[in-house]
Image 1 (tube, rainbow, N blue to C red):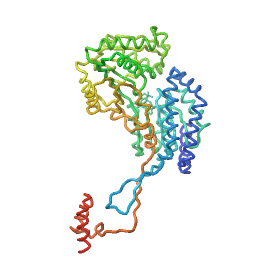
Image 2: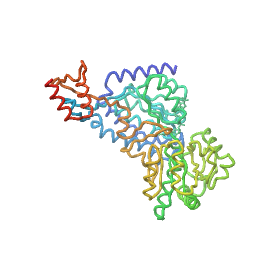
Image 3: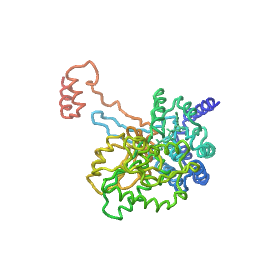
Length: 482
Ligand code: NAD
């Protein structure tokens, strides 16, 4: 039954793309405006769905989901014609008379598979790019956020062209059926484990993929001499660990690196910060809850390891009925324990001490490339070394997460944290093919380009490819004479 539904949807999507209507500026703008209207008219329902799925506070729901998508929509609407325009390129004189341009064209029918932690943002933000680029699209939200998924399936058809943009709900078996089909691009947000499944399925059809994965994002905390800077750093570190989805976020801080001599004062500062943000009583803390029992138990079992449990220096209390885990700090848990080898994706913060802060570079570069690195420092040499000696999707100095909302920066990973990028104009590019167009005239024609071959023609071609215009001229004169 589900199979027939997917087949019928695919047929409709292909027909819509073939009809060429998704290519017009008018269609793209009407869809983007439709999405904007949906966000404006249904904001309260979106908040409710996020509350139901994951207990997301309204501020986080607005900031991390609604505002992020609206910002992309506003930018796409403002820049659409400019992005769609072909771009002239310079062509070398040897090709004279010739003109060249790059023409963006939509890819076709694309698939967006998303995760549960930002179910709207991670489904609809990529969709903005897919629509802006003129594609038909399917969004497959995570089954672990069922209220958000159902909201999108029920509401998108009322605001968008339902024959060209569809939401298909379901879990593993539906995703497997979708992956069996031929797509023109797949943007997947989720774990590396499922990323491999997606890429394997895509390979069968030679479908290009963008994998937005996760990993362990480190933060480096260097000595900050001013108390004002330290206060600001604590606000930002606490937000980067606990202030988005209770740490269930791909670009959240996974662990913190600090010099031994600063470790105990850092713990005290963080404890104060937790108290300031969430109060004294863990039972009254208002935070996004852990998504489900499975993930709650996963996090609990990380802490059950006796050596890890012994390293807890703050927090650690849990409430399974309410899927709540208190902001928790650990000091030097074993580096071979799950907490330091697996992505944490929860409110646990291991602090690892180093003799010198410069050792953090080796610590990070000897592990898989993370999606983000955060460095709190005023040391310019350290900044330069982090940029040049480590590899990651992004590096942010003296703040966390903020890079996610800057449209001028590409968002994506490298190595184990994924590949491909989107956000801002990069989203448009992610779902476009940049077609090379070259226009030649019939005016000039040189015989050196055609057989029969001889040494003279070889010298001519050699000079042409090395742009040696003097040699070319001399050869040209010689060729004319011969
Ligand atoms: P997940 O990989 O379990 O699921 C992601 C999607 O894949 C869901 O839509 C799910 O239905 C589907 N899926 C699950 N198992 C599948 C299977 N066997 N075959 C086909 N499809 C399958 O990830 P998750 O738990 O939803 O999200 C957490 C992970 O996502 C973390 O690793 C996190 O770092 C990463 N993440 C990355 C970003 C980013 O932008 N880079 C954003 C959010 C989350």
